[in-house]
Image 1 (cartoon, rainbow, N blue to C red):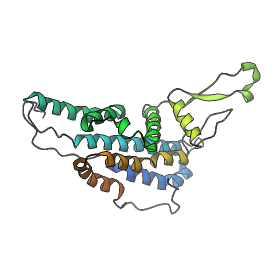
Image 2: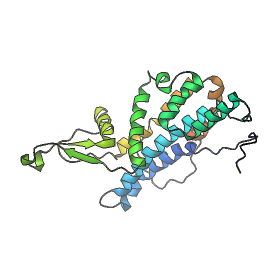
Image 3: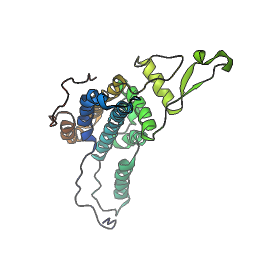
Image 4: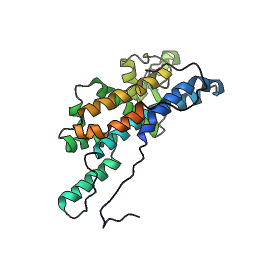
Length: 245
């Protein structure tokens, strides 16, 4: 029962983001064997790779939120202006989006997240991971549009992605993960694309940890060990492991 009139005396937290790296690796291992039971449209394969993208973004977002919460656990009673600000900060972090988490770093460490990582190449890559995630999380369909003259015939129509996925397609073309095509639709759910985004997770998170003050970095050390170094306990069903980034 929520008791706004009483101070919090203890918290128990079960992290969700820590499970994502092991789940991503498991999906990568099982992906090839899943093809045998897939439909002619490849929906199972598409679902696996879209899940890898979603989990990659979820892991980063969860980690950022938990990192920010280490600055203030808000155990104090809400009896002063300063204490109410502490509680407000904790509650804002707990419900913040990726973009909002970035801004909250300016409160925690004095600089917005974009400035802390402005010289880190991985920052740009992760921005497009979240662009991709936002489309997938809302179930947005890929839409391609042509603005070619109708009389030229379908074989000469040039199509381009429209809407939320356009920036993602441009990013993938720039990074040679897909080729620009003149007719038809891109496959944005290949193993290579999913593994590219999954491969950003650990480097990005470790980069963020290196920017944290020592006290907060030390607090996050155990969650990182759980997320990235714990030995997997599943039994492998496929001896041909998928290539990972």
